[in-house]
Image 1 (cartoon, one colour):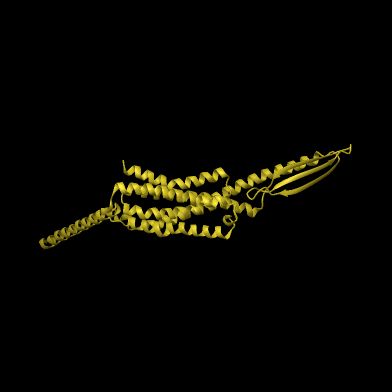
Image 2 (cartoon, rainbow, N blue to C red; image 1 turned 45 degrees about the horizontal axis):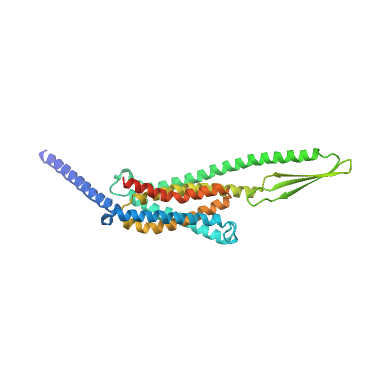
Amino acid sequence: MALAGLRRHVGRFLSASNELMAASLSAASCAEEMQKAEGGECRDDAAALRLKEVAMAAILVAGVLGVGLPLAGRKRRPMRTDSAAFVAAKAFAAGVILATGFVHMLHDAQNALSSPCLPAVPWRRFPFPGFVAMAAALATLVLDFLATRFYEAKHRDEAARVKAAAAAALAAAASASASEEDITVVTVVQDERKAPLLQTHCHRHSLGHGHSHGHELVQVEGREGDVSEHVRSVVVSQILEMGIVSHSVIIGLSLGVSRSPCTIRPLVAALSFHQFFEGFALGGCIAQAQFKNLSAVLMASFFAITTPAGIAAGTSWVQR
């Protein structure tokens, strides 16, 4: 009995020793991880602040150029939304966005959530990065579906009102003729983003052999395929804007809180590159959606300032 009790005590002692050693190793690994994250020996607040200022300026310029090129060049042949050069550039920009999410961010998230500074349960027992990526993709699909349904219903209501107004205008033109009347309906295309217009032309001969002319323009529903394509462009541009803006704020905050010039220096060029092509993809979607000039400028400006604003917010928080 005494021997069995001694064995139990020794086993408990060894188990406690192993847990203490594991905790010590985990604490040491966590300290090394924190030192590595903070830049280690490369930490220099003054140099980091100068690089952050350069990063804000460079990323702002890259974002303005990227989002502005498709919007400014949509009336010119090489940069029109239906040109081969525009489609190729937009496809490359979409590839940059996908690479940012699935090559850089997903890998970094996996490394961060497997850090020894975090408890093993639940962070290292469940693949949270892949789960969050899957949930975000499904949420984006649901949001895309709901937004498309909303805009299609809105367009159907507007089209019904316009068709009713057109029928009323044609009926009024028919009843206003005194004797002989010739009514013709012709299609007038105002521009590429407006629905066609119906022009009612009334030529009336009165009893005194006089005659008069009447013209009226009524907007009517465009082709169903054109409407669906336009709705898709509007929905895609707004969802892309929302995703890029939220991503840009987080990236800006991450760069702003860093105190290591060795970490910030390569990120200036990388983020400027990403910002330019993300802006090009967003600008292309805005151009295809054919928003009004004020709406397009607001969307482009909001995209361009989010990452510099995030860097500024992170920098001010660190310096407090």
